[in-house]
Length: 116
Image (cartoon, rainbow, N blue to C red; front, top):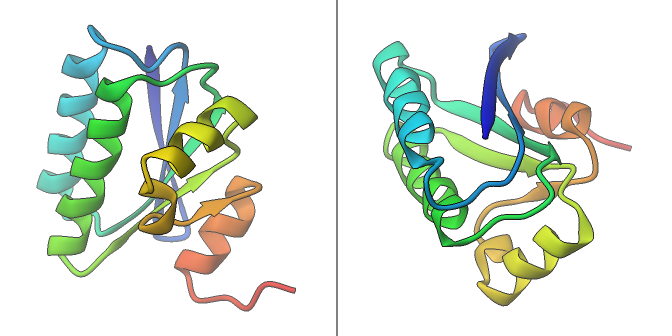
């Protein structure tokens, strides 16, 4: 699992690459802690390069969502493949954390821009 953090107009984008599974949690916890220390409240997780996610990935997403929400922020997901969308639907995480077709739409929504 590789993780890249970028900032665009006040929104943090976490670009994940690789399998989101047990053993990749140390880097994810470090990223979550870094966001917390930096006071980041809004973030998008770009899942376009993640082929698979197990309970480790789901736990990271839920914990990141809770951490951002506790600071008055939001977490959005973007560009999940069909397999990950099914997992999000089965676990009902998709009902709590919005999923967008692309990162740009998720960023715009976090900035409060109207999407057409």
